[in-house]
Image (cartoon, rainbow, N blue to C red):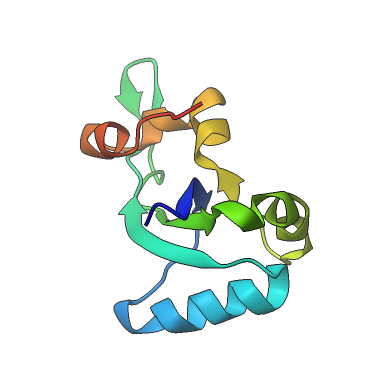
Length: 113
């Protein structure tokens, strides 16, 4: 896995266990990027004034690693994906996105830069 160090998150994207190979092929075809599936994470509810916001949370987010050599091209090619593009994990954290992930996820995937 040392060739896959950059973690990315694709918000609102659900992947079944039997779809991992399809996902890898999709990313290679549409972004010319080699990826490795990490896991599916379901978000916590948003919190405002100490209370959970109704109808938030439980969104499926796809966590995956980008091959080190493919990071520069993925940085640009990801914007060609029709839906909301995948984001770097560090950007998610820097923009307050860490609040919607369980503590064990934040500990498992610490900010690396």
